[in-house]
Image (cartoon, rainbow, N blue to C red):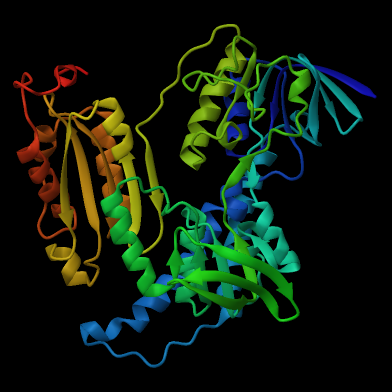
Length: 479
């Protein structure tokens, strides 16, 4: 077996790993990037980008179908499934090729293809052919689809979101299990492209929404486009010659439907279970996850850092890039370890209407402020620009802290949420007060005027200054 000694070994060639390699290389001479299967990011291959191509096609079809409300009459909308999926694959391949060109700029001797495992705290073994001894490591092995065991009864009809983007045609029908980000985006897009979709959930969750009022509005709307039960009672799943049959309870009655495929959108799991972490010397929790500091990405007091989807904290591309930057720099500088910039949380779901979470969720605000907070809101039903565009569906709820008047976060289901979410996340990161936000310019007529309406409502509900009698004294200025 060949032997090699390096300064930093990075496991995983996705977003976090590539950024970590660049940062570590600024401080260390010998850095290697090890990828188990093939280079390229989850985002480009099976995530953010190909899904948005599919969603764009669905939005075009939906707009055409509803153009008559503007006095514009289109001929019957026809969906060419083969052409839709060809464009998805073409653009997917283009995105991946761009990533691979970036990878090719890394010197060949610093790129290794093979499955690496710890065999000692300072040693990796790659495919039983190469041993790499390193003084520090970055784990950036990403994540994979998590399939709930009960869904395996679908047999050959069971698919993951990874496989959707390899389709050459659209199916006639699809059962989606999991109304999370992936399930909602793909399920709605395929429904708008003419696929018969039914969605099943457990526990009542709708995407990342924590606010009950927004969840109710979102659920009502999605059910106008396709059946969605966020707390479904599924009795039986069975593969047959003509598809997968699902028996479930609907309105108190047992129903049975057959679908071409069952899409498992039941979350993702970090790729840490085949890394030999038991030989790494790291402290592991009950799930086998290394214990780490989210501000430094350091695992305990070891020279091992974990970044991106592998740490299962915030599986988003911009978070993976930030974490790769922090982990790579700290691995390169070791033993000097610094805290890195952690930005205000921001997540967007590209449904229509969109979902956005900026800053803290309502549950996080309640915990942070010990219940001493206020909520302002706006419905988009009568918001001027939204009504003009025929997109007047949704609700924005904004949260502020009594005493300080500080803006804490927001949740939204509505038009232009991807843009409004950015503005609100910036305000949260700058620790702005609601009053300061209202001093900012708002043009007319724009959807963002709805933000002002919600902030005005919140401002009226906030108690400013020292706590009054009966108020929580722990929630004053400076908390």
